[in-house]
Image (tube, rainbow, N blue to C red; front, side, top):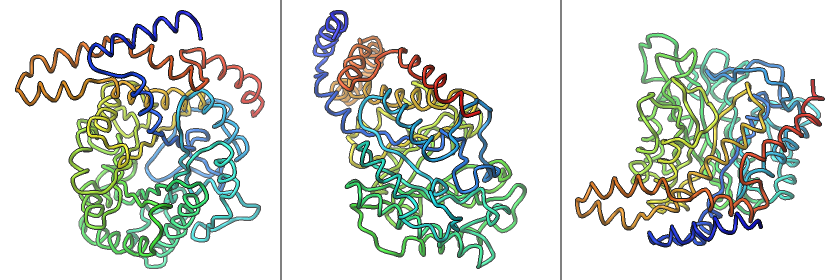
Length: 419
């Protein structure tokens, strides 16, 4: 440890102690908050089922930065490189299209064995795994409908895919000793004016009930459902709207997924957390950065990311909120994208843990909104960066932008050879 870091750390401890914050306790609490990194940033949501196929479902990865992962070995190597540069506990979030098999596997036939390499890798790297059925980029989703499809045969295919995915998720949890959160998102919707908005939602309701009908051990598997405002090609009507899934999660007591990019541009999910927690047992967060639409830009340390982290910490939701990331930028180095976004999420959590929340609550209860605003703003100037640097030091990761040199070296030695 350098003298400069030691001095900054000691000063930071004193400054935060003056406002009633124990920085050592803050770091202990930060180690209770894993962030689930999404595998699909590494290959632009291509997967291994049909990596040359088109990405569909109203989502889009833009850019053509060289060096994307082409197979599971490359993706795992890239993830390891990124994770070495991110301090603290992490998980990995997988989609069903990232299965490994020597022969083609229909999505309604996926099994735990197709993900055994991921489980062994997770064990070796002390990671939990999360999961998602992949209801997009498939011939049977080409017309824009999956679980709400009017064709019984097609709808049953997607029901069976989701049921098979739940068994994979439970396998993850059983093998790794930490529950896998399996999130169901579907692209179902219509481009233009929709006359019958009810029937697809009735079909989706029944389909979801069939999907979750098999009882699984909650210590191994957690069901989550995710809404969306619109997607490309589904601008007019989305079957799985916010109201639909909030009602579903409340009535079925599943987890509810809130994606930062899945609402109107003037809405923020930070304001929805405390409301939803009154009705659902758990929340899954997909922290992202929408730029004018659900563009899935890399997460910044901005006001909304900070507000999300603050809601988790202020209301002690550590055991009820699962933090995941969801962005995919193909215009920059993909490993750097992971590192930037995940470190920013962790920085936001640390800053939230360094807030004198009890004092701020007293001021708010007393109606002293002047002091509340003043302290919130002064808090931003306290030396949280020194605490972050110590956290990085203790986890043997670079504290500042020097991590970028590691990424550049990896790009030169590994990524540049992929063509």
